[in-house]
Length: 91
Image (cartoon, rainbow, N blue to C red; front, side, top):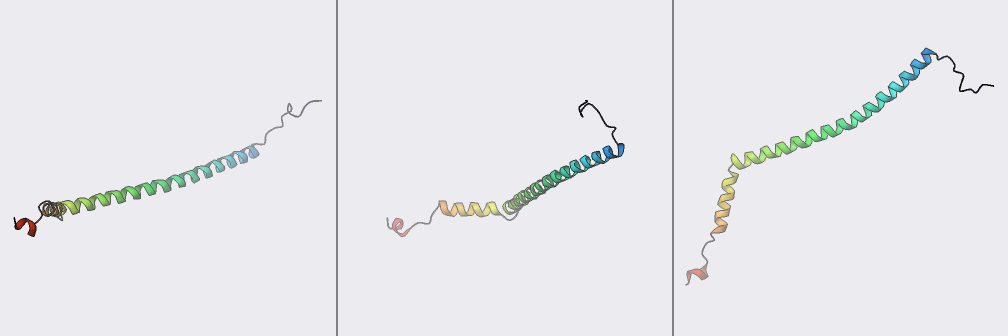
């Protein structure tokens, strides 16, 4: 008696093609799911970078074109040299 493993049946080419097609379809579906996940991360990264750049540009505009540095300098000058008080004038 021969064991079943030693006898090979002829392979049907159409069945082999269908099995290969199924494997390729599964692999493609897995690849598309992974791409969708990474696409979401990539989109979120670009949105984050866009907001960072927008904030930087707004800060640059405020500091250099609207006189933000001048306002800070004026505020620091007024705080560093306080007005004389009544007690110091009596001396």
